[in-house]
Image (cartoon, rainbow, N blue to C red; front, side, top):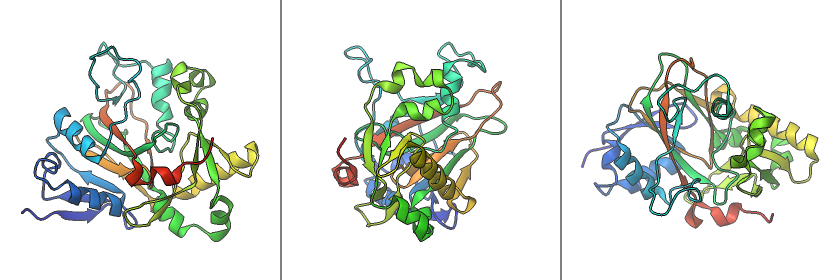
Length: 294
């Protein structure tokens, strides 16, 4: 059996994994080794993989139920299509600098965890590069587990034990009030989730934040925004961040319960496409424990 090799991405979290192609973990029966690395390190990098759509879907299903935000929009019998983060529109022309598509892309430049506004939220994002740019376009990860462990007690005590409210439109309003009005961002009611997620596999705690968050229990609106901004600023200090510059075929897999992420800008005259599958959390991932009454 090929031995897996791990190389730290940062001193605080994340590893690059080598020794076995990512597409081989499920068919070889070694997915549980991958899952153990995921729970332990929060972020996994596989460089320059031969990782097609079929392998992408197979790996995602091994983690759990695939998140399907457009299930209600498809015709009967229409298959799930892997979502893409791209500035290339359906007619293969680049999206312009203006318009809702571009504003929606810019929302990804905010620090966030995917799908905190959906029940159930996301366990992981499996993100792979299909088309890359000559500059910019990095994906950055911030460990809210490492930040929570290092957080000063005065800041920690202000959020510990409290619930946080999330809504999709909140993050979009930070980019454009018009964007936030789009029906897409009002499909789901607000969620109410605990501020700290405990990983059932190892008992490790992580602060659970996102740009979609807007209200903290026990604080008014202005106080909530100020506290959330302060927490995100703390968690995204350089010592808690890994920044990945993409090559075609690179794959990042990270734990949405313990890692925030964001994209960085790139020249919009250059096409960039990443394929992204989110997997939803289940009871075994701590779903029941994180929910609060709405």
